[in-house]
Image (cartoon, rainbow, N blue to C red; front, side):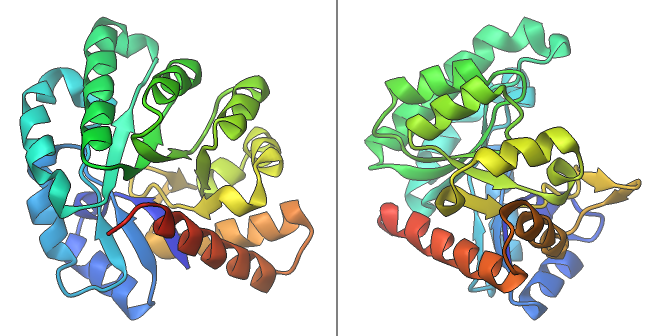
Length: 245
């Protein structure tokens, strides 16, 4: 199983959650919300060969943590994964919009200078500005749009720009999310939990809950679950081969 977007450091017991991921032999991309959280989060997975830790600066706290951009740049040589980064156009974040755009632009510039990174990107209510920024940072690396919720026109643009996508049980629980997932190219889709933020029935999702996303993708694609698992494994192999170690 593959969880390409989980916040391992934010579970109530991060060490136990990480240990269970190892026991289940999951591939997990453990994202961070601030560069200063990267070192401690990476330490959780120091003995886990299938867990990678991404360096992030979440758009929702870009205003408060913009001073950590220098630290993010310093850490880039230590990981080929960057996230969670991006833009959030929610009304309550309107006052931080200019800072968000500047921070995201700077991170894309840093990724380009570092030779490209695999990026997991937040684009809630901001799909078009995110795609505009990615179009201007064509050498920044491979963009994986996590929990994409833009319009179908924006989705088509993302596909045309070569973006990848990660989908999870919470996204696929709704008809709209399933409709979006059905249009995504199967060879550019990965699964995610977005736990512990994402929930179903009031329960935070764990990385192993991506099994439910596999089941839903099997229904959407009209194939067996084992075929979904094979496709996802092939996708991950191809994505990770795009950016050198």
